[in-house]
Image (tube, rainbow, N blue to C red; front, side, top):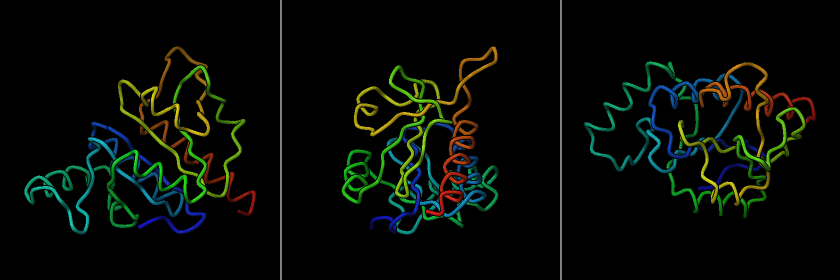
Length: 173
């Protein structure tokens, strides 16, 4: 099942932390009406037709609920294989954007989101793999002006998704 036209998409690929996933879901539910894909090893809340063992699905859902605070029940959450998800979204005309530090990245402030945008967030310590970045239409980076070189993925997602939402609202898309 593909996203409704112009509905922004979040892709969380290979995130390890249930708490980070829960925090991103909570941010998404606060900022708008997103479709969320969990790919790779990303934990996800209980979903219809859940393929996991029931006890594992229940355990992960309980742990995630501590940070998502019910957001998992407010969003359209899907699981998938990253390559398939990217192909399907691209066929639907989505602009594929990774939030990552990379030599090819543009600053978040210079990014003008399109009506159909899918934003990819990657693994906590390694980020988005180079081969996956090669498949993106653009890579956006949050400039770091302090002493630390990177943000937690949930913090980066909050900043990036806020920029996306505000841009779409103000452009009347």
